[in-house]
Image (cartoon, helix red, strand yellow):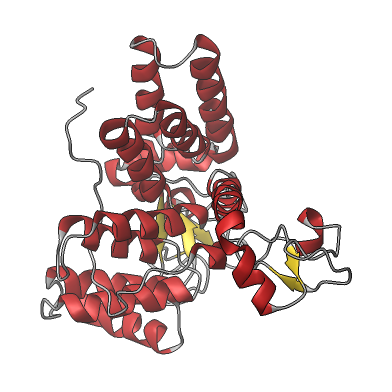
Length: 333
């Protein structure tokens, strides 16, 4: 496997918001009491202090003056704990990013050809259920040129598909918003190439919970497409995407730690999380680290078992039939 300096592949985007979120936003859901049991001012020792450090959540002060006075002594401890909290969240295995197929209720495969977004109803359906024949409530086979979920006929043209997409955008469907951003980014399907509009849509999709939006923003900063190159911001957005379950962003972070920073332990953590989410290229990266003596046999074995576990969760007879019939219905690389 090649290990060139290019660390990311994916959609590029642009943002109207150049501000990077404070790391405290990433840990705001951490329970204060979990880390701070003593209500004593860290500066003057007065009891019943309730002015907590809003970054590390570890110490309390009786007032803002005490907090300011103690800042220089507390800074290193605070930064260390903030970094720990950030990594706890960053390296937590996220839930499957796509969930289950709306028809067969089997986990959706991460490979793009293994599933399809339906512009008619906004559902993501696996290739097996798209390929499977449809039956009416009497058990008779019917025309399968319809959405297997809502039974709407497939669009007859790109224009019709785009009109359906726009309707999904109007109802705040984050996947439709993300897709429209991609069309603006590349100037596809009648949309003018407009990086500003694309990045606006990516931010909108991300704010609605679609982690791929953050990945697209990160890629824009990494490549300098529509914005100035800013690797720090790129990594920030890749991290937000990865914590939301985006696999390509997780792979980018692993590659950055491996190729750019030389942090093998952190790279391996990223790759292992991506493997559990079905990313075969990350499995190959773990294999490469093992071959170079930078990962242990146990690491590689664990990665193999994780990937096999993922395959067991996504495999189905109908998906196998679809993949055998059409190359663009493959769900396993």
